[in-house]
Length: 179
Image (cartoon, rainbow, N blue to C red; front, top):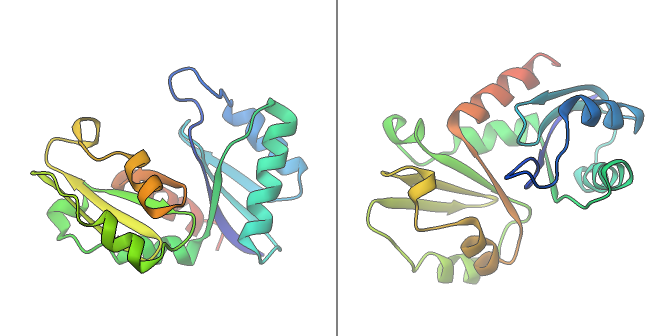
């Protein structure tokens, strides 16, 4: 059995795409994945499955959500090991890391696209695009950042979803319970 973390993009934000976590756990459990646990309302799901292909799991979760709730949701699935790699590879020193965001990319972008996206800078904001993650730090906080997800998704031609340091720590802890 493999342990995975699914990140659902854009649910329960501003009253849109409402997905109650109890209903989500039930739907996903009925789809064949096991030990389904959710963390906060923003679409973090830890589960186990014998499936070895993350893309198959993403498709299955998307279909289950569409069938139950009637709308499409972008889903990104990472193994526990992949999440640990992303977390541990943060280029920020610890004082910035604890205040940073981990923007996980669905696919590893083309290096030429990374170079183009990396040209733009704003004072007080730092980011590093490393493989399938953008490590982002903003002195003023994420809500006041000039960079946004749309900028990176358009420049890198892949969808992305961000989680803060505390959420990453919690998901790593929850996923370790299944190992």
